[in-house]
Image (cartoon, rainbow, N blue to C red; front, side):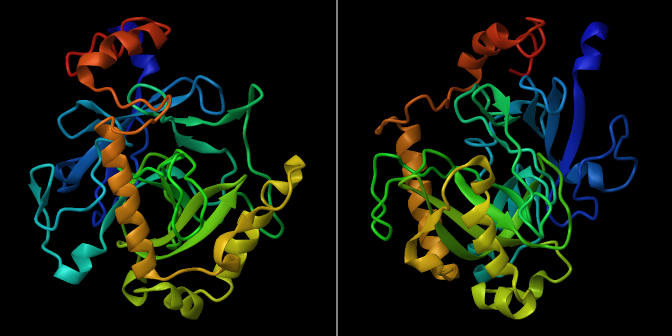
Length: 322
């Protein structure tokens, strides 16, 4: 076991509402304060960052390995989450309260993403032609201009045409751009409220981009719909549109296209997209549609698969919590 310790670097992702909504420095504990009881998800790093073998695995509060794609709920329960009571929200607030898995912190360049085709769906850095992917700096910006991530338990079906874009989905969870003031950490799970949505068309596929804000942001109460972003963060939506239009151009690719002439749709439209993609995810999980290589296996299947993939051969596979 001692030999495995250098391989396992863990950090806590705090529930939205906790003052410490970030992973603790390695080797630090939560201390005697109330934060320890509020931690719902823990992350476990394997491999070196910025390397092809780097993975960020997720555990729940009981210490069991989970999938951030399939096991973290889409909606935030208004009364409790993982058995821990939470403050009851008003009905209208609860209806617009979702979990977000942060993949890419603001201002960073590494293209981190949930590995939908691997057991447990850890976060990894995307590769292309054997090389790690980094997004270019699109003047005047540095890296991603929001905290970027995914909505768990959503899926954009690549075999189903979206009625509003007339294009099929991109075979991934729905992407989300969090516009709050705080730079978040890769692997954090936060509560967000939805403000609007942009329909990116990426090589003929619908790739929705949700605009949302961390409910724990100091200015979150100002933002209720997409027009509030225009009012309180002037220029941010225009910058978002330009970022998505040009971010692949430095790679030699053409500009990206958008449905609705690049118009941002409002919260109500976004909530319908989320509802639809959640239904697609449920259909995928029941194996009523073709998910291709997407992995949704759980504990009884994971032991052998992870054992085969693990370099040390005994780490995750020997964990009694699997």
